[in-house]
Amino acid sequence: MIHKFSLIYELDAPIAIAVAAYLDSEHYIFLHKDYTDKYEVLYHEPHSKVITVRQTWKLFGISMGQVYKCEYIPPAEFRNYDVKPSPWYVPSIHHLISVSTNLQYLPSSEKDTTISILDVEIKLPFWLYPLRYMIQKGIEKLKVEKDAEDMEMIYRREKLFGRGNNSVYLANHQFMLYKDDYVKYYGNSS
Ligand SMILES: [Fe+2]
View (tube, rainbow, N blue to C red):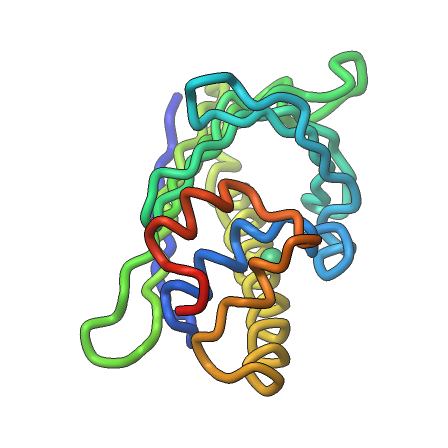
């Protein structure tokens, strides 16, 4: 059975910074350590934008390893899908449900901010279907709390470098996914 939902809200950051913060995978296991404490890029498919990642997420207080595919569709769309438990023999919610997400950022028409639109699709067996709203709440909570941590990081950097300055994300030593694609759309110092 399939359960779909969307989560839409505003992030107080210019779109170039919201996208940079999402692609800046270096901060994940430090800033978001309460939610994710392992992040490893396993494979970048040649001639494609698909990256395979191994990551540990904490959902409902349980830490679960997973391998999944992610894609950046410039300028501001991100897909995660094909989630599998890792290691496969450890009991995990991902043996039971399959979650794919599509996150899109749009520039706000009124202010220099970003509208975050998360579309989630959960495939789950019929006997878990009654719990779909509980699973939805868990995913929503994770996203809201992670974004709050990101906003703290963004405000801190904004104070130091000015609003809209993306140079800190583009430093040579900074591990950012799809850096070349990002620069093509947002430039070196937006
Ligand atoms: Fe983040």
